[in-house]
Amino acid sequence: MTSQYLGQCAVGDEQRFALTFKTLDGVLSNPTTITVKIAKPSGTTITKTNSDMTNPTPGVWYLSYTPDEGGRWYIRVTSTGAPKIARQGHFDVEQEYPV
Picture 1 (cartoon, rainbow, N blue to C red):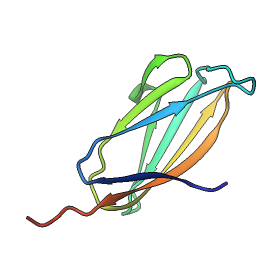
Picture 2 (cartoon, helix red, strand yellow; picture 1 turned 90 degrees about the vertical axis):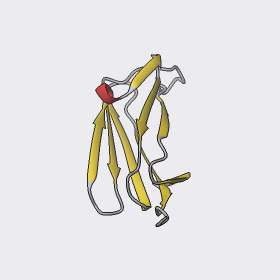
Picture 3 (cartoon, rainbow, N blue to C red; picture 1 turned 60 degrees about the vertical axis):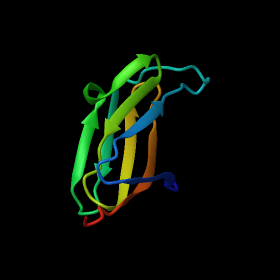
Picture 4 (cartoon, rainbow, N blue to C red; picture 1 turned 180 degrees about the horizontal axis):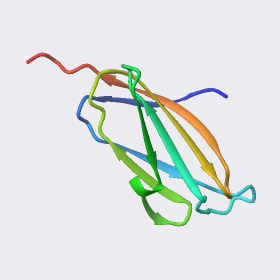
């Protein structure tokens, strides 16, 4: 599996990740559990779950997160139930300018 590039932002710029879940038949559906692991450039990993996200409609979830250090960040999303998925990506955060 390759990692999807999710873009670039600056330290302190809130990011909103849109997560869409569909069954094998293409029907939007809420999984039983969702786990999102976010790895900071320093090596620290933050874990988020369903309770940290919003779910405006079936199969659509949003997670907001504000990066607090520069460098390459990695994100991995897994779910259980139907649909069961595993996806990963990365994004870059610019270092804060010393002003």
